[in-house]
Image 1 (cartoon, helix red, strand yellow):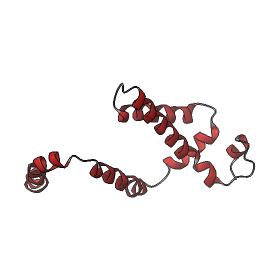
Image 2 (cartoon, rainbow, N blue to C red):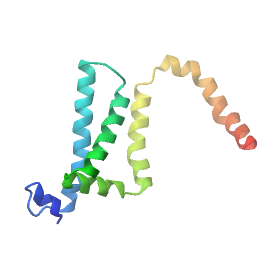
Image 3 (cartoon, one colour):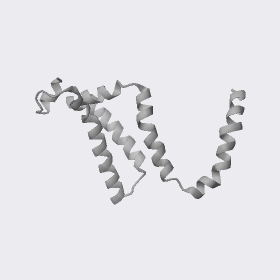
Image 4 (cartoon, rainbow, N blue to C red):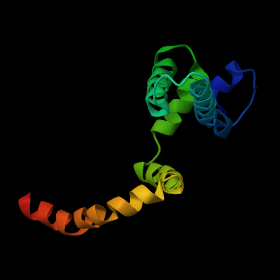
Length: 126
Protein backbone atom coordinates (compact mmCIF):
# COMPACT_ATOMS: atom_id res chain seq x y z
CA UNK A 1 0.00 0.00 0.00
CA UNK A 2 1.38 3.37 -0.99
CA UNK A 3 1.10 6.63 0.94
CA UNK A 4 0.33 8.56 -2.25
CA UNK A 5 -2.85 6.53 -2.71
CA UNK A 6 -4.21 8.04 0.49
CA UNK A 7 -3.45 11.53 -0.85
CA UNK A 8 -5.68 10.76 -3.80
CA UNK A 9 -8.44 9.73 -1.44
CA UNK A 10 -8.13 6.11 -2.51
CA UNK A 11 -7.41 4.70 0.93
CA UNK A 12 -5.68 1.33 0.95
CA UNK A 13 -4.88 0.90 -2.73
CA UNK A 14 -2.14 -1.40 -4.02
CA UNK A 15 0.92 -0.04 -5.83
CA UNK A 16 -0.43 -1.34 -9.14
CA UNK A 17 -3.17 1.27 -9.11
CA UNK A 18 -0.71 4.07 -8.31
CA UNK A 19 1.55 2.83 -11.13
CA UNK A 20 -1.27 3.47 -13.61
CA UNK A 21 -1.44 7.20 -12.78
CA UNK A 22 1.46 8.11 -15.10
CA UNK A 23 0.31 6.14 -18.19
CA UNK A 24 -3.27 7.34 -17.88
CA UNK A 25 -2.16 10.95 -17.41
CA UNK A 26 0.14 10.63 -20.42
CA UNK A 27 -2.60 9.16 -22.59
CA UNK A 28 -5.05 11.88 -21.60
CA UNK A 29 -2.50 14.61 -22.36
CA UNK A 30 -1.65 13.01 -25.72
CA UNK A 31 -5.31 12.78 -26.71
CA UNK A 32 -5.88 16.38 -25.68
CA UNK A 33 -2.83 17.49 -27.66
CA UNK A 34 -3.98 15.61 -30.74
CA UNK A 35 -7.44 17.15 -30.57
CA UNK A 36 -5.99 20.63 -30.13
CA UNK A 37 -3.70 20.13 -33.12
CA UNK A 38 -6.64 18.97 -35.23
CA UNK A 39 -8.43 22.23 -34.41
CA UNK A 40 -5.34 24.48 -34.62
CA UNK A 41 -2.51 22.78 -36.59
CA UNK A 42 0.35 25.01 -35.48
CA UNK A 43 3.24 22.51 -35.49
CA UNK A 44 3.78 18.73 -35.66
CA UNK A 45 2.15 16.52 -33.04
CA UNK A 46 5.46 14.90 -32.08
CA UNK A 47 6.91 18.29 -31.10
CA UNK A 48 3.98 19.00 -28.82
CA UNK A 49 4.20 15.50 -27.33
CA UNK A 50 7.89 16.07 -26.59
CA UNK A 51 7.12 19.36 -24.86
CA UNK A 52 4.26 17.76 -22.90
CA UNK A 53 6.50 14.85 -21.90
CA UNK A 54 9.17 17.17 -20.60
CA UNK A 55 6.51 19.15 -18.74
CA UNK A 56 4.97 16.00 -17.28
CA UNK A 57 8.38 14.82 -16.11
CA UNK A 58 9.15 18.16 -14.50
CA UNK A 59 5.70 18.33 -12.92
CA UNK A 60 6.03 14.87 -11.44
CA UNK A 61 9.52 15.50 -10.12
CA UNK A 62 9.40 19.04 -8.74
CA UNK A 63 5.86 19.54 -7.51
CA UNK A 64 3.85 18.09 -4.66
CA UNK A 65 2.05 15.65 -6.97
CA UNK A 66 3.15 12.62 -5.02
CA UNK A 67 0.96 10.06 -6.82
CA UNK A 68 2.19 11.23 -10.22
CA UNK A 69 5.77 11.37 -8.94
CA UNK A 70 5.59 7.89 -7.44
CA UNK A 71 4.08 6.52 -10.62
CA UNK A 72 6.76 8.19 -12.75
CA UNK A 73 9.51 6.72 -10.58
CA UNK A 74 7.93 3.26 -10.88
CA UNK A 75 7.89 3.51 -14.68
CA UNK A 76 11.43 4.93 -14.79
CA UNK A 77 12.71 1.84 -12.98
CA UNK A 78 11.47 -0.71 -15.54
CA UNK A 79 13.90 -2.68 -17.66
CA UNK A 80 14.92 -1.07 -20.99
CA UNK A 81 14.17 -4.32 -22.82
CA UNK A 82 10.58 -4.14 -21.64
CA UNK A 83 10.24 -0.67 -23.16
CA UNK A 84 11.71 -1.97 -26.41
CA UNK A 85 9.44 -5.02 -26.58
CA UNK A 86 6.34 -3.17 -25.38
CA UNK A 87 6.41 0.10 -27.33
CA UNK A 88 8.42 -0.57 -30.49
CA UNK A 89 6.05 -3.06 -32.22
CA UNK A 90 3.00 -0.74 -32.09
CA UNK A 91 5.11 2.16 -33.37
CA UNK A 92 6.50 0.15 -36.27
CA UNK A 93 3.04 -1.25 -37.05
CA UNK A 94 1.38 2.17 -37.10
CA UNK A 95 4.11 3.62 -39.31
CA UNK A 96 3.87 0.65 -41.64
CA UNK A 97 0.12 0.94 -41.76
CA UNK A 98 0.18 4.59 -42.78
CA UNK A 99 3.19 4.44 -45.11
CA UNK A 100 2.65 5.79 -48.59
CA UNK A 101 3.17 2.69 -50.75
CA UNK A 102 4.16 4.71 -53.82
CA UNK A 103 6.93 6.42 -51.88
CA UNK A 104 7.99 3.09 -50.35
CA UNK A 105 8.29 1.40 -53.75
CA UNK A 106 10.24 4.34 -55.13
CA UNK A 107 12.76 4.29 -52.24
CA UNK A 108 12.92 0.51 -51.69
CA UNK A 109 16.04 0.04 -53.82
CA UNK A 110 17.99 2.62 -51.85
CA UNK A 111 16.83 1.07 -48.56
CA UNK A 112 18.03 -2.37 -49.65
CA UNK A 113 21.34 -0.90 -50.83
CA UNK A 114 21.90 0.81 -47.48
CA UNK A 115 20.72 -2.21 -45.46
CA UNK A 116 23.03 -4.67 -47.19
CA UNK A 117 26.23 -3.33 -48.74
CA UNK A 118 25.94 -0.03 -46.86
CA UNK A 119 26.12 -1.72 -43.48
CA UNK A 120 29.07 -3.88 -44.57
CA UNK A 121 30.90 -0.82 -45.90
CA UNK A 122 30.18 1.04 -42.66
CA UNK A 123 31.61 -1.85 -40.63
CA UNK A 124 34.85 -1.79 -42.60
CA UNK A 125 35.12 2.01 -42.41
CA UNK A 126 34.69 2.03 -38.66
